[in-house]
Length: 373
Image (cartoon, rainbow, N blue to C red; front, side, top):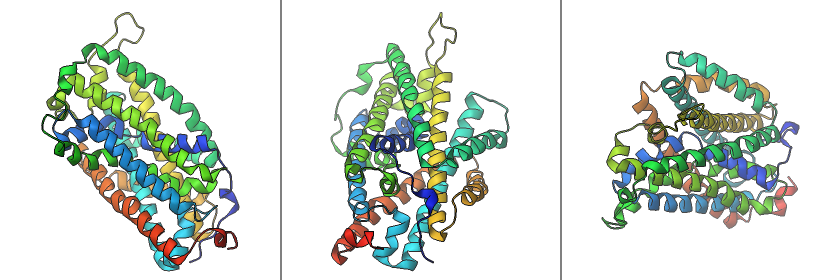
């Protein structure tokens, strides 16, 4: 099976657009669940330190992936991995990444339908919610990477403004004592939480695919740094405010602690006194963003594997994603799926790129030789 580039995937995006895509990829359901997941791992108020260290690990992994991709200019991971490990093993690696992307899309789809069904559209069948999600994402994805980037550029600042506003207002119930003492039980609880927090930055692996379309690929480190720094700030604010308002034990008792934080206060006199509706709508947009870009990348993988147009694969993958999303029996099973995704990401995007980089360097692959292929 020969991996070939096709004309529908040659559009370019700017460095800033690539960073926005990476940011929107990361800011999915994680912002709603990170405080609880991190509290389960750390069990002390030092969760914010684990978030910082987890972000640093994600940036380091992203720079390794950049170093690998820059050796094969103009090619995505699906196109160059076979040049390193051979055609058939490369196909297997590509299929593994595609399966991972489909599962991430399914996780976001199920999380979105769960949140929407509980807080916004109570009693609405999940299939109806998912169908709306499906067709809006499909419409955007068929427009290509440039359309996705422009759309995300609109979503990102709106999300940022309302998120910061919600967090600032929640300062009325913030108690700094809930964040003390710092390192009261030593450094080991913080280290124990690094894996959980680092996995919240799932999305940095998009550099393996985005770099092929960035108009200035040598600025890939800027994409990684910007694309990870913005979610890091969001996650840090979310964790500090939720722990400060609810305490570690209070966070452990909630499935969606960030939403519960925003629901815990109201602003009398406003047309809409509770802000959770705004935060929910905006974060559904973020889950929609993650779903769209993972759907697009998964279809791109098949498109480049078979040398066919991307649109048929976009349509075909919807049924696969819907089936996977329907498998978890309850919300706890959804969280377990997210945890397993994180474990898979450790090997696919933590260890594998480093191994491929060393193997490529040992064989002298990449560079100017690739441009001749």
